[in-house]
Image 1 (cartoon, rainbow, N blue to C red):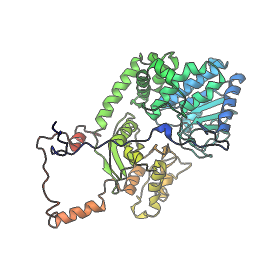
Image 2 (cartoon, helix red, strand yellow):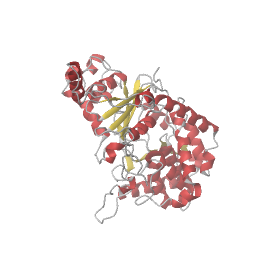
Image 3 (cartoon, one colour):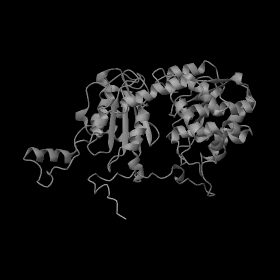
Image 4 (cartoon, rainbow, N blue to C red):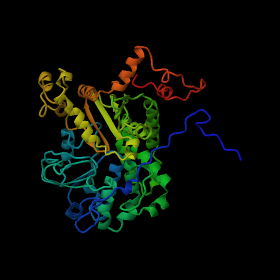
Length: 482
């Protein structure tokens, strides 16, 4: 039998093997003094959260649920809503507050709207958190249920919290809410297990293995099928990415569904998916620019749709180099005068076992202006006058990290992002030296200009003249930002 010629022998390089990334559920858990897993969140926080949910249902007072806009946040909101109803709280006493485009739960206009229902209990789910005054000025009990990166002080005054961020492998908010609520009423598990899967797949990916410490979800996965639930993830995530930010359609579809297939009959969700898919395809062909050390790749797009997180996740899984750690996609068209950006840890960096903390990295870059004052600009941009001076000259004297504000470097250490003014973002790009050539590249160009490369390095490599499928050609397929 003749041995088949290898790809290399045929003149083309062998296909590069995709990097293997350790399974998410295998991340080591923290243990308490008795050797028990501290999962999905610290035991005392879990118990206090259950006490508040039970107390709320018994109190029979106006209650406000404030879920985030994606599959994880919306699913957690529906899980909590159904739990409170099962515990006896009238649905007429439960209100749902959906945030407007470009705002967060701490934006003054949002807190004002939240106060209009005069709630006695407020549940904030999957919104991330930060230190702030009480959510509203009137007496209330507030519980933050979350999994985004936070320190012990990163919560509103007089609030309680349960967070999964320090209990690896970090659970999603929907899964955390599900595990909080299932012991409270026997109907919760069967009514909301598919919602927990939907929200978790929305954040952690559709290939997640439901193995310890994650609960056994084999029964609902078999009943509803993995394909159906993953289709629900795509459908629910689409409306909030559209230019119209149609979150209410996604919430309504999830909240009224008694079976996951009910979600997919919504014509609005189908239209949203088509709109977002087309915009992702248009923007994903943007060519990246790199930092000189190759650690960060930046894609800059302009879109009224929130497609930057999708594109960041896509390229983080495809770009591959020894130095690459973070992929950033910056969208200058989502909110006028702002840059919305998303960062993801590159798959190749995770596979190599590198400990990449995006939040720390971003803040380190933003702090470089303290030691590189010569590149600071004279002018700044408009920010909250209570925090940052309105006068541009005065603002320019502040450190960049301070001018970037509280919406910079939010989220998770491996999936962060932010919303910043254009001027500050441009300064951040200069500090990161995005698009600059490395010292090695400069030396090669200098050698070439002085007489070319060495004979060995200068030999022409055989190139197939018919080859059309090149990376440069791919990036030229879409014209972005015009």
